[in-house]
Length: 496
Image (cartoon, rainbow, N blue to C red):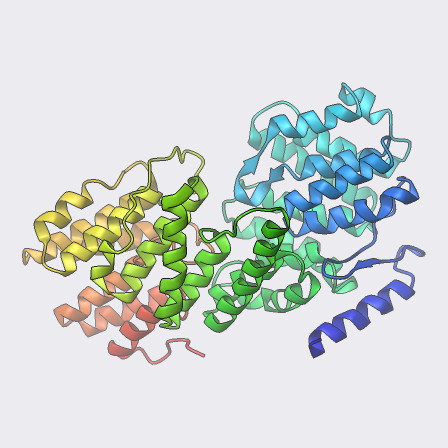
């Protein structure tokens, strides 16, 4: 047990033994998941499963959470909040996902209509929870439902300000109101809402989790470091919790911690898969972030092992998610290692997907795959082939347009036409116009980094320095950006 874990456990025991500000509620603590206070009208037999389900829900462990809520329903078939919880597992607001049919089907098991379902709840506070989930799975567009849900959660939070679960889920609804698009004012409102919960209960997984999401960009990540450091110890049995800490670590360029915590996340996830008789996941969110961390540390042997496993999985039975992570990992590996021969090592062209719900500035799997190939061909002197491959990059998504513009700039420069530098500058300006995205760079060769490198080659050290300074604001600690900045005599590269 680490000193920090011991300290957090002591705090949990202290909170559990003391009355909260509402007067009498106690915290329920579950090792490996965190603690919360959620008084409810369910039977005693339903309590453990219900509370563990809520804790898992806060850590976005939606599958295991759903199983606990089903067990709570089995213990108490009239317990409305058990159906509320299971329905909530099908809403993934920060992933731009909701399964409307499943949510409605689950609520339908409690009663055939909204009126009949609400009639099963005698408690005014719990009825407000049910009214909120009814809005979430009601009529209208996703944007309309998200707004109605947030407003319902605000009513619940205002009516019961001492209910930390109401406050925490209200904060998440604020984050979800933008459909996964970063909006500084909205995200700061969510942070201001949920920080008091974290201060009252430092072992609340949702409070730590949503603080991290609120500060998940290089400009504000330092404000989320305390929550990130706490979250790994709060919920060691939740793979997503281990990974989520690294959203802050990536934004701060803390690569050792990015690798370490994503290893924990992968181990936790793969143990759960093994318990269910399923194969380990080598092509997923956790492995891709770990892989990026290895690249930044120049740990190419470890990164190649992850790539080999991911490639084998995609060839064997890759689904859409696996293809998405494979193409991004492969492209990052080729580009960040600058080993252009690797374009021939992991060959498996991703299929085209409908990505109409993508966030502004997003790139497609096909786009990043072909971008890496085109760049590798260009860097090895195969200009004509590079131009042909560039034409394979789709141009529907904003990010793909940036990739195409980067390559066009390089191709133009390769024919000694200085207009290519203007194209690279345009690509950088276009990327800068979109909200800052979390995690490894969406544009796999960051535009200001590329512009800085080409300005250095042209002898414009001053212009390169300005480009690398801007690149460091978007990708702090990124290895190639730091190297370029040092070559351009940037005095402060932010390295730790």
